Length: 138
Image (tube, rainbow, N blue to C red; front, side):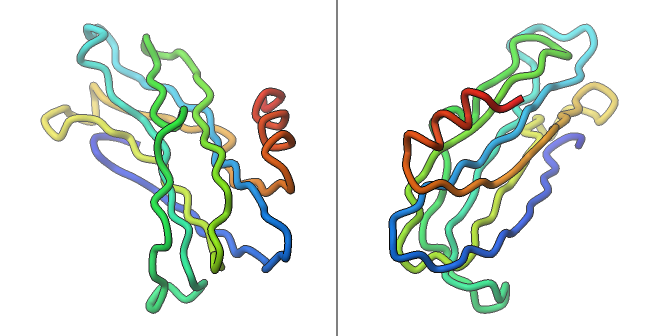
């Protein structure tokens, strides 16, 4: 993706009587030749818990950000793991993950590109299972 572009994916969530934990995860990198580290792009993840799978009527229950979802590469070509672990909010019917390039609008697509690899949303019964998954994710 170049400049301030984004893509997203929605995943339907089955109702569960027990609490669940969602992991939003991906690897990201930037491609910016000959740029100072403070001018690098900022690829990041974020998401929503939503109350419907119907996009026209879905309302956002919770915004999902923070943790390691905005971890930044320190150099062009460095792949980093970005993720967040969230307790699924009551009433959640779908989860949306966004992958955003985060490049400044003044940057050209020739000098600012973000790449994502292996993005996903994964559900677990316990936070410990979610943490173990993140640690082993490659």
